[in-house]
Structure formats: structure tokens, C-alpha cells
Image (cartoon, rainbow, N blue to C red):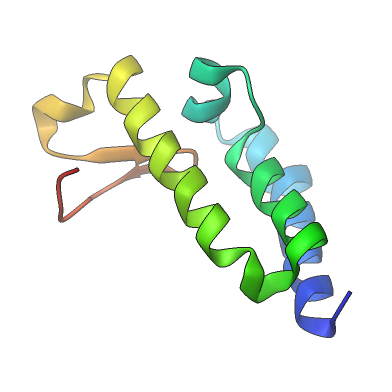
Length: 94
């Protein structure tokens, strides 16, 4: 692994250990599809493709999470998107 990939892997691991268990909700993509969470998918992409090669697969996973969240939350009523990182304003529609 390159130094950049190691740093990205370490950052995602820190998020998974320190933040994710305390945030109070689960990744919408994982809940709806039964597949990996966004952080797990991103970490696997970094490990298999490197940090730069993981960008597009991670973006695709986050888009999947956004769409899954629309199915399980009332966020559409407030004009916000929700991803595994919590409610965030999304200035565009899909």
C-alpha cells in the first residue's frame, strides 16, 4: 500500500472505531441493501485499488447511501440528504 492509501485506511479505521459506534444511526446503504456500510466499502476500495483508485467506487457507494436514505427517512420533506455521515444539506437532486 502507498503512504496515501495507508493514511486513508487508517483514517477510515479510526472513524469506524471512534465515531461510527457513537453516532446513533446506521449506514442507510447497509440497512437497505444488507451489503457493506459506506466506510467498509470505502476501506475495501482503498485496500484493493489504492487511495486514488478508490475515489469513484466510494462516490458510487455514497450515492447508493443517499438514495437508500431517501427510502428510509423523511429527509425529502426538509430538502436535505442523509448519508452514513449524518444529515447534510445536498445542493442537488438525483
